[in-house]
Length: 125
Image (cartoon, rainbow, N blue to C red; front, side, top):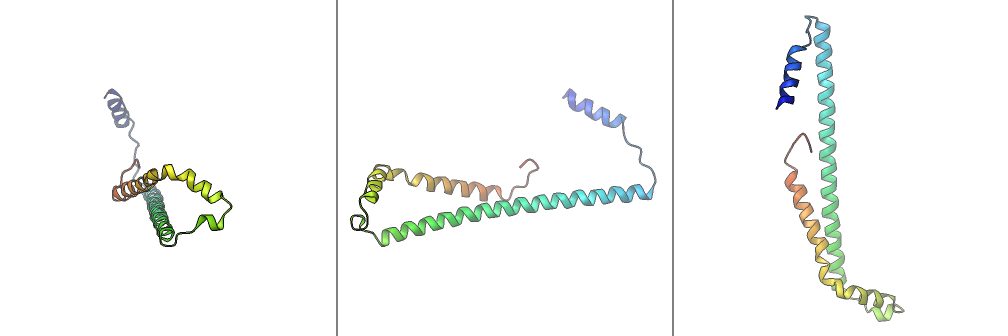
C-alpha cells in the first residue's frame, strides 16, 4: 500500500502545467484519437484471431467426424490391398483405441473455453 501512496503523492506533486494554448489541446486530442485507433485495431485483430481459431477447431472436428463416418460406412479389407503394413498398424492401434476419445474431449473443452471467454473483454487478456 505504501507504493501506491508514493506514486499517488508523486503524481499530485508533479502535475504538468496545462497551458491555455489551443494548439496544445488539438495535439492532445490528436494523440488520443491515435491511441483509440490503435486500441480498436488491436481489439479487432484479437477478435479476428479468436474467430479464426474457433473456426479452425470446429472445421477440424467436423472433418475428423466425417472421416470417421466414411471409414465406418465403407470398411476396407486391409488384407486385400496391403502387404501387411496396414495390418501391422491396425494391430498396433488396436490396444489404444479406447483412448482415441481423449483428443476429441480435449478439443470440445478447448472449444467451450474459447466460446465462453469470447464475450469477456479484459485489459490483461
